[in-house]
Image 1 (spheres, rainbow, N blue to C red):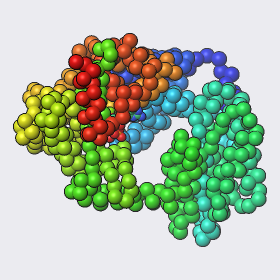
Image 2: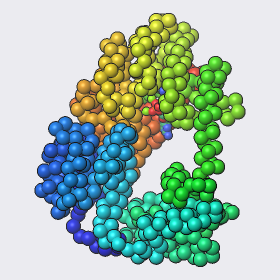
Image 3: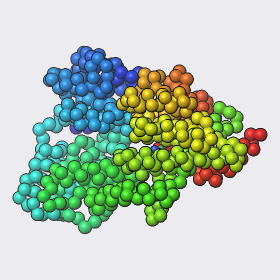
Length: 565
Ligand code: C2E
Ligand code: MG
Ligand code: MG
């Protein structure tokens, strides 16, 4: 099935539909680099006429949902209504998780939420969807997967359901098995090779099942599912499959991951497999721990989250929360000079030790507790600036993070103003970072609030730019002074041309809008050199310094000051 496609000579044509130029450009760069041919449309109307015109050649449509004239949902509806268009696969581009289900119901095949998020992920999804749509047409009726001899999806589930109906008390577990980055493996080594890997794994699974009961299926390229009696040691089961691949393909690093959902009274197999797949997805990319057993470990994680939520109030009261400071450097000066900092919260839990905000902030965002934490951090930060000013005679401005919930709080402006006044600061001393994703739905109220804060004199930085889904047009109307480019942009700029191109695109856009740019997560000399050459203004990252406790930051600040004078 796949070898067939590997020989397909002509490039695939992809239609990119988005009303925002920056998004079209970004996707275009990524696709064209890989040899795709691209067409563009700016709204649903244009999209439909392009789809009708090129329906014979189109391999894929990448479709924004929110567009003027005719939106993405309407395009999906019209495509579904026309049998000639129905089989063209569509990947939906959306910032709004809640829109995904509706799009799926309307026939979309997949989603991309972050156009700038790692080009290889975007490419893998594009490739996967195209393969799927081409593959499906070839094998449609078969019960058995020709490549591996395992069952195809429908037959596998039908068999599993039947078995379960007659033996509801037999403890059969659901296993989901995937190959890490299978599409990359395919792209790098060729489809022939990919097929051999799948066939080998299929063989080993059949050997495994021959020794016990159970059935297995393969769907969507590298998704294997196994329905078998409870095993005493799943790490050993995964190890066995992994070992077989290791010895069959000595020179290529192939990694498996597995999710297991144990039998549960009254739960039908198809539900078990849903959870096995979730467990499997959770260990994606986690080469140290490629196995996840739903229940035990996932329940543990849920319990931990619950505990953190319960402990937070005590944490604030007992001062378990610490504010760290990470400097930002002006890199267009020679030598680079520290000009400001960001306040970042840390939680030193009495029993669990240091917990990163990456773990607990998302929990709090879901339930309003975040504002409480943020107010605490802002106050500590303002007091710290005042204290530096008093003891050291100066202090650099410090930015604090604002969550979406903060911005919808009516007392925000008053609270911040009071903080400034009570600590004898000016509006220039405290900068505000608002994450890009807060802006994406373009809520009027949010824009008004931020605009008003900016008019007061607060400098506004858009945090994590590129991780969400804002656009050039919106950007020009947004009340912001600084773009903070998301760390993901920077990570691979030394290795990857596409990433360098995306960074340049962002820098160009920022320049044309007269916004300054902060690059986050800069760790190496090479990254710094590239950013400096391309005119990036500010850099924050481990290259200069990690986030530091106040006392250490103070020393750094003083040292910088001495060197300057
Ligand atoms: P952010 O605001 O984008 O902060 C930057 C994050 O990148 C920080 O992680 C920082 O430690 C990390 N970082 C900086 N330089 C480098 C580098 O060179 N390499 C790498 N790998 N990482 C680097 P941290 O402190 O874990 O914070 C994570 C996120 O948690 C923050 O992302 C922010 O969204 C949130 N956060 C932190 N403090 C607060 C807070 O007080 N309030 C709110 N609402 N959110 C906060
Ligand atoms: Mg930030
Ligand atoms: Mg950031």
